[in-house]
Image: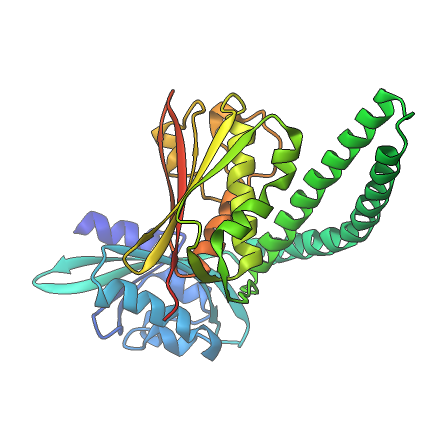
Length: 344
């Protein structure tokens, strides 16, 4: 206990101990300084909500729900606190529960991430502006290439190399458009602006249309299995985006798997969609991180892309109230799956 007190008191990060009624029982000098107060007594006996702006109370309510109500061992969140002089400080807050003489207490570490937070905002703003600026020239390029392709098809005297160059350019524009859309969606997710516009639609219709660009290459065969009449209540555009991301990943990371299966089935109160390839598979250590932002499996580090596709797909499915995951065996292939809950 004496060693703990020494670490607690001398930590450079803000530390506090709270009781189950969320009142502060003890704080260290770093937290007193972080909040701009003079002595521990200014904080002991208060609640952390007393130092949080109203719009951040929901963050702390979430922590309470996850940690105290469900009694999970730890929980972490990002929120902000008000200093004594009224200025805001953005913090990374991590809390664990522990038992002390028959009483459940919470031990919280609070790290000041204000500088990192505003740097991230600047980066997100830059990405958002740059992505929007890129959309217009990409749209113009795409439209002009479509016109050129139509003219080439109508003129049988066109040289083969010109036909090939035009097709390559069109494919590159499609890839560029996907990258820009990923960047835009990533910033929307960060800002909590990802909106859903749900309708009822037949899933097989979306599957047929979403992967036209893959089928046109003529190299890969995409097979839809399961009930072709399954209807789902979801954002059709965003489910299309998830399917495109997963099929693109199968093509990118399992290029030797020339057949990609898309299977749909009704299970209780939701629909499960699985994209199956017979590629090289994914190591277990990488599977856990696949849906993190910017992550790419180490075996596939040479593949192009930003590492945002699976992250965005995951956020879209979570927004729908569904789940997303992967089952994979190295040397045998991978099955990426996601679920869409039924309409209530």
